[in-house]
Amino acid sequence: MKKIEILIIVDANGALSTNSLQSNVYMVDTNKWLGSWNESTCNLHTVCEDQQLICWRVVAISESSLVSIENFSGQLTNQNICTPQKSGSDECTYWEGRVETKGASGRFAYSVNLNVDGKNFSLASYVDVQ
Image 1 (cartoon, rainbow, N blue to C red):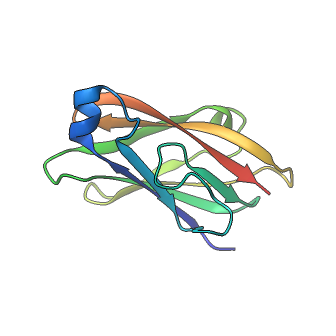
Image 2: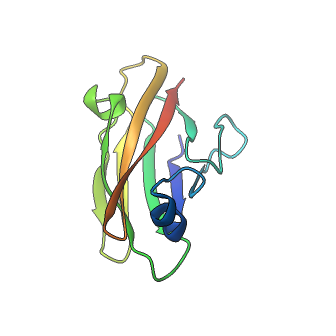
């Protein structure tokens, strides 16, 4: 079972000027056309399996902007379905967690809490465990 990589791309200037991530965030994962949907939007639905590893990374479109994942919240973490942990170095930070549903399937909502040039934003997404 392969690790799923999720990339969050942030237009920091757009997010700060509109005070919103809507239309200023593009999310993609390595599932491609094999089950995930809403790619290139701020509401990615990632299809995965029990015991699969998921890795989240965030980057800014502009080199001068600073973006980071602060933490995760919502059903995914509250029910201990997946509890991503921060890893890597200051230059290459990512968050990784293993899906642990004990064989159960379902859709689980989560929020990725981002810091964009010092301002906090929350981004809602889902994992669908099959």
